[in-house]
Length: 58
Image 1 (cartoon, rainbow, N blue to C red):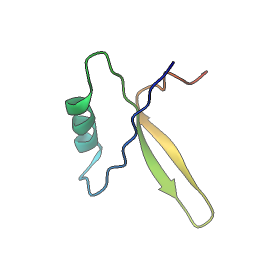
Image 2: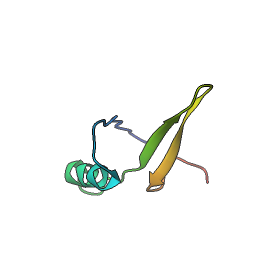
Image 3: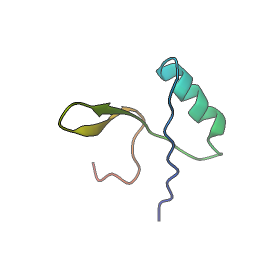
Image 4: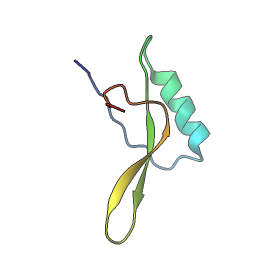
């Protein structure tokens, strides 16, 4: 069974700040995945920037 904590960060300078934030908060043996939310006029979606989703089949 997987447990997922999700956070939406805003007003960050760059992806390095986000990675540092995640590493500082990750518990021992905890993995994390970083996505960026992309939106346009018709749709929105997530683009994975770092990490592997352990619940993903691929």
